[in-house]
Image (cartoon, rainbow, N blue to C red):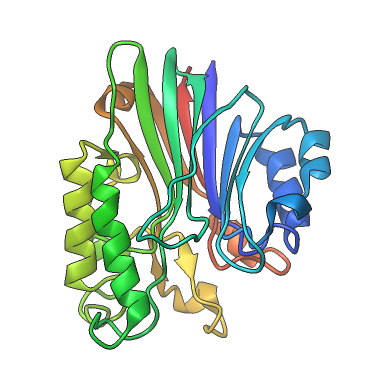
Length: 267
């Protein structure tokens, strides 16, 4: 048996519900973690998700901005909706579920984008992003013989040289600046997290999950970044079967600028 989990920054769940339904019909993940839902909890579109077979839904949303949701075929227990940087943005949700023979603590994150200017002294959005990443150091990959941890989401940082189309040209562009990439990698390694998307992919191979709306032809220019991530505690690595980046979804009608990332594990 296989356990399948997907993560996707949907950029408005109500606007793009037809794409979510298409994805669920075609790929049928056990769990789908959405970010940037842009939807208050009282207006969340439960009905089409339940009609698609996803009875278990945990949400943390707000009007017009941010928001995360975890939908599942399997029972979920809501653990925490954490507040970061003393700001009431809806950027985190953790749940527990059974997968791969373990009780899994699953974190769903939407890290602040950080604005355009990579200087915390003049850009409060970038200062917020750095503070957010710093506070994420408290999120550890806890595990034992019967439990494990998974962390997914739009982390809004492409940490490695080949996670962007041009390392040299993006070194001073928010999402790939040294202070961001070092902070995220320190948080990941210090917390004991394994980067599953890079586990079987050589570091010199380009890997993207996001393509800007600004490009006239995103596929031809292919100026992407790996902003979406799937991490786990070390005791889940042996269950990993496959990671798929659904690049074709960037070409769907009225798409998000991010595409789904799908993880398959032996269950």
